Image (tube, rainbow, N blue to C red; front, top):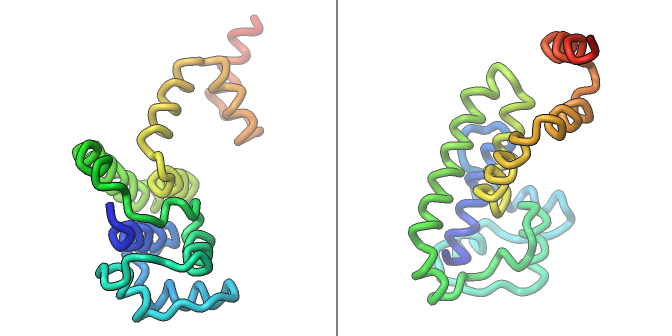
Length: 168
């Protein structure tokens, strides 16, 4: 994936994360970076995305990384050799991220916390690995109960019933 493709993808993810149900425009990214005390013009972002400017200065890379909340190392072109061998996987990962975004919009209307959680996973650089990890965690019933209690300390009625049955 090229730097320009990554920036376009980050604009899409960030727009959905902010509840816009669309990608952020380049002008909105530029304005957001100004709010962080930096300066990147919309035309410069356009040149980066189109490939007319294939490289960033370290300062620009840091501003974009801070705005999109990604590691600065993410904002470089992927090497061609790796790109060729990981392309099918990357396409699947992109499909997964779009599915998570769509799910966040659907479920977020009724449960904002769930919608936000799905967006956080979609925005993570390794969203597939996050879901695989979550799958492994839920198989450990004791661990999942303890984690849920940490997230939401008020016991749900079903949890209260289960705990009452266990204690008898």
